[in-house]
Image 1 (tube, helix red, strand yellow):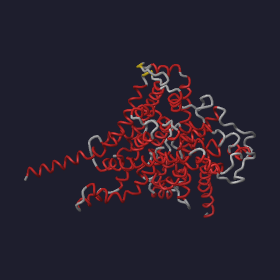
Image 2: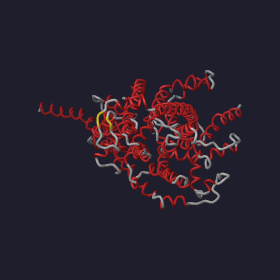
Image 3: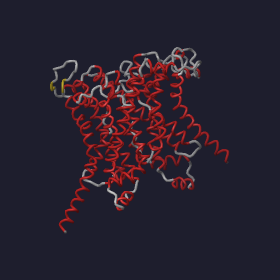
Image 4: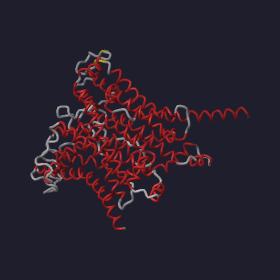
Length: 306
Length: 278
């Protein structure tokens, strides 16, 4: 009788221990096979001479691809510079505008629900489509932006957005900011709504005005969200290439070529899988450095995560 | 005093909100207007802000000439299948992450968090080889598998957050009443979870509807294109038919915008705070 009871208890205990692993098994198998294993493979492929157009020539060549990228590849240097510009300007503008928008939407006013749904809607639009839509907006002869600027007297002849490097970069960043504001606003909105009302009440009683409240209470209270959102979105902005792909395809003269797009052109255009993998390897290492910082800082809010 | 307060509210609240709405909607407006113009009117001078003559020829051309229906179905298949897989798996694993304490939980959490930063352009290269060896190149299943994997971690976190917000006593009470755990979860938790399941599912649907990078890598056959890829090719092929392109965008946007309207409230809820991926 006693032994039976123990066996039952053992079985229950066993069940309790094994169940979570069983429940997680499908996800872990999926992630291991289709995300972790490929990640390792990229580094293996990056040390191979592996061009689809030269079949039968696949061989191990050590770090040659990396050396070639770092010492001889001018497009790579340009792409690094463009990527930094693309991430920095996009993220700074999106942070400011996104916070402003969240701050506005956090106040109570009539029709707030509808306003919210409208201004956050670019969130759902695919990067490729953002590219097409902004192509319609910015096109030299058929674009509405040039027409509006002309009518307002700001410019006196059409800007050709896609034929000069700087303007093309401006164009992709404008489109990206338009698309990205909702991502930031959504993050900040949930942080802002978690600040208890009574803090504002007591600040008001103490005579603090709106600006003081904003800088002394609101911003410090959501500092963690600021840091995390900025880092996370920097990584995602760095990775995002579908918008540039459809708006400028890196041109003119590689002036909007970013690292992910460069990987894509090497992979899809030249089918040089070894070289593309080495580029991907470098991108990953850069990312890991940033991600490491993210996780370190992320520890701030760790208790609530587990 | 009251009047001054009112003016302040107009300047600092209503005007900026209206400005944000206009800037957000202007591109959508322009896209819809362009799609309803004759393709010659697109280039007419002066530019027309309202079609001189409404036409649906761009839409009918889209389906008859360009075969948009096929692409629509492809995207639909990928998104629906992915959504179902993601919902089932994230329901199961989210439960484990929320309700159990076990060795390695922190590690699993960190691992899944890391996968959120893997760039599609990097994974695309080795995954092309994998799909090739699985004979899935030019099969929509390659996209279903990839989209499921890339969306799973975040959807799992979403589900975990929803489970966390439901008191454990709910399913415990049911178990005391003689339900098995499985039954308790299905009969008691599921009804309360339904809105969360819809939110998670819509999130996965939108992301898979928009999948592009993997599609360019895995799909080369025209009849297998999902919508974003088709639109991109369209953009290149018919360089000047902007009205048709705009019509394509409108059609492609309808399902995602409807879903977005449904879930936009959930996106800034506690569970997903700070990490809505796109």
